[in-house]
Image (cartoon, rainbow, N blue to C red; front, side, top):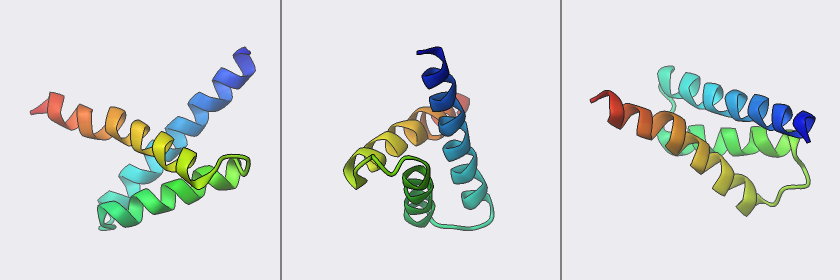
Length: 72
């Protein structure tokens, strides 16, 4: 169970980092989101597109959107 949690956390960090970096270099929100969803699915081909989108959206909301609101 711990190994699964560690893998999930690394994946979450990778997706959030990729999203932030894509946005920093000028990618629009939708393009960055789609790229991160594709990244997730490359590493988790068992996930449906819907599942990947939901999870990536939750991570971005938690780590990027909410963090930005809290910083204001």
